[in-house]
Image 1: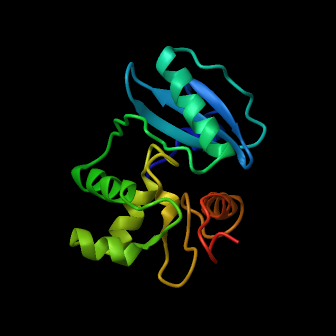
Image 2 (image 1 turned 90 degrees about the horizontal axis):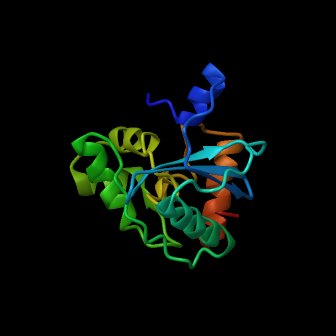
Length: 173
């Protein structure tokens, strides 16, 4: 299983090289960029210090994410360049097409991609650009499902917050 940069920090005690840290109602978002694309967005714990953007593109990305966290109608129109396998990138491209305020079941995406729900779940868990590539919009056929490798606790509350923020009826409440 892919370890997030936030998990790596907890395990090693070293801060990952974020280009900006954006405060969020559920903690913070750690933002990593290249010169012209978003390459990573991580969920960080609430005690993460704010980090001002260290480049023009990081400032733009942080501004768009902060605006989205205030108002879900703000489009997340940022170029992304996530690293992953061909299959993972196919899943991520499919997730980006899920409209705000809607969800899709893991199995539904799996059928569309000719794969398994478990493989789709693995690609969701490996998503390096959370929120912008909306893995939170992928749910279990029987309810909310897991999130960020967890089936309960804080990460599931983050998923619930994001869905509620986007106006998803039922699951987000």
